[in-house]
Length: 288
Picture (cartoon, helix red, strand yellow):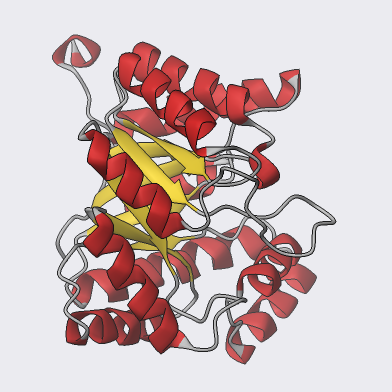
């Protein structure tokens, strides 16, 4: 089995305790030499300043390539472009451009006056600056607001045509889900890399809530397995095995890159990477 290139997603801390957890996560996973790491933007754009601070700190202190999430929510075009320019001046070259989730309690996405109406407009405008490598989101299962996968494939093609260089998928539980989507994208003429998004299962209850919110289907066999594992106190073992097998199946199917949604909890992601042959880069002075 070939060793994959890996990348990680972190989210910005909103408390002192969460801050310690983020930096612990970065310290544990940085030695695995990720291709890049990304830092999320809170629902409704609520963590804009925290995201910027986390992005620049990780880049400056750990020497990692950081892709900053940027969304269309609650900001005008000028405000978003000002944020992008601030990233460019800080040396950030990668952006994950997303429409973004509506604020809690809002009735779906509504652009603000003078704001971007879609992720396609955001990608197109960022691409015109010539300052960034732009990544976008993709849905191997229908987006909650989409009628079907065909519509999601067409939307992704429009984002790639607008200037995105690659896509990162929402998480899924079976390799065939990704392969079906990849085949549909190839048939539609999408030739940009599509990176599978992998969600290590740190909490089965939590993951089921995530899945319900983003349209990820839960196989009956997986729910049964976790019900038994929770009863027997063996969830960590099952989580590692399930996620490692998913990644192995993807690699066997030709996948070369994996993007892990860490939820700022590094142990499970680290263990899965080790099982896939991704090991820490050890400098010579540490060996002596």
